[in-house]
Length: 195
Ligand code: GRF
Image (cartoon, rainbow, N blue to C red):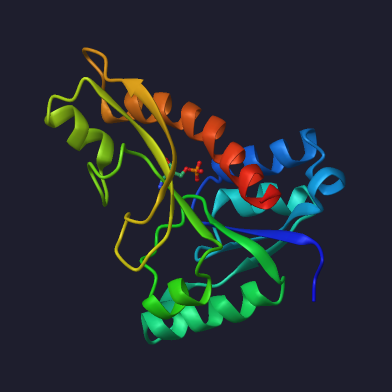
């Protein structure tokens, strides 16, 4: 039985959301206040920029290349073994760009959350910013939600809204949304480790 609330973060890229959560946990002294701590960062890409940052912060890092596995099931089983070694109270998908098997999702039921760069249920899947622009949306945003085996569904925990401005590109819009991701994601993680 682990009395501490270990947080494990999964990334595939730059890891700016991961860094926002780690920094918020330190600034807010979650360790002392909630017994909560980000203990490890895992990635399906060894080259993920966020791994370098996490390592420099003294966090445990694990890279498992999904291409080295024969099936999605085999990759997810290996990930689960690695994650479980950290006895997580919460598993946070922060730009983790892999579809997860139902086995994985069930295994972490109630302790698995994701951030998605749209106002769900609109624009599940990829290229959300371009699709919001193409659809003529005046507003878009981001959503933190619980993960179920249906992609980008599951209970909505928090959302932030940003305007789509005339002349926006997918990149400029992504940047505006990302600023909000960094604001709401740590807030939800803290709320959940408090509960
Ligand atoms: C974020 O926009 C996230 O919502 C999306 O991928 C991006 C990851 O960014 N799924 P980062 O790796 O946290 O910087």
